[in-house]
Length: 454
Ligand SMILES: [Zn+2]
Image 1 (cartoon, protein in one colour):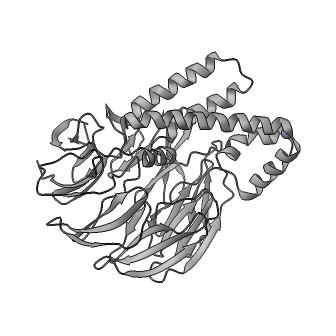
Image 2: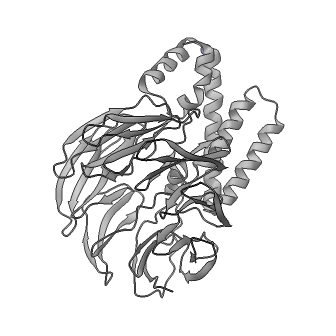
Image 3: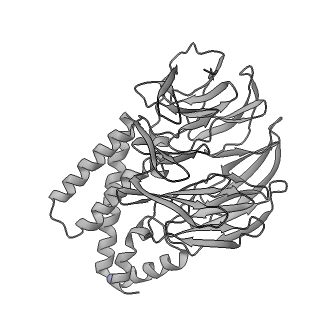
């Protein structure tokens, strides 16, 4: 590897987005090349600088717009400086805009949690002491049949709680400390537990009793992996880890397959439709066989590799992928039958996607809505906060940021406001189940609220 190749990949190297081989090649080069080493050090310092400045800001506000302004002013500052590495420093600054709401934002939130203890008169019930769900990882609460699952405790020490949906009574609390990512099928609930720095354990618990069914001890392939969101497929429990995908049998906890992709940068979370698992890197969209992890089809995106993982969602006949490149987002729609690209559109940076069969909802610093068949813009509106929208029935529910404390109900065709449901806390994790909504507030209270119909 020569210096030019090293410099081209330096961003991915510093942000841990390379394959183990590529990583090792650069590492070997660093040993013998002081110039590249210096470049690496400057880049790491820049990353650290942004990390800590964003950290201070998030303490004050969870508002994406504020963070964006703040990072933009940092970028202006760098532009005014004379430095040899201006290009790459600017690039990192731009990427930081995007990271909020993804993984860095999440880990920052974990450190700077708001511990307000507000009383609340919400009806029909509330449960105090839960860990708020954050950013785009809308995994808590989780509603299955007659039970609402949430995480209780603080970030260092959190347990699963199972709460009776009708009454808000506690059914059981897990003995295990778990990380943020839960998922559940009809009878089991799955979560990660951390043993030490080198080992993670995937747990399967019985939904009714909280009893341990199995545990799968996992040595992460990347030492940066702390936790990963879980996808449940017909074949098992699946997750991504850097550029790998792993699937474990949901009944037994046996690993069925692991697959490493040639992709540079991080993979999206896996999603399943039509008996296939879809996964995207910035460079390609893959359809893979859930039985063995082999690629059925690959569609190149023509985009450059970046360490920001794409956002991917599936509908029965369509796959949507949002990819961030510098300050911009590229939104693509593929036909799931043929894999072919149906439409593509340039947008702002996209934090999350939702679809309701006719529309695609892209959460950027505004809420952008597209006709999902044609990609034509339908409407857009200003939204605060950064959590995903929820599509349910004939409405779209948008949870507010810290200032407004409400859930806004919109008409998906026009964007017109139908009504506002007051919420006692700013909120991110909203799940709608029939006429009720379950919402974890930033104040640590899980609310069941009446969504009703209008
Ligand atoms: Zn060099």
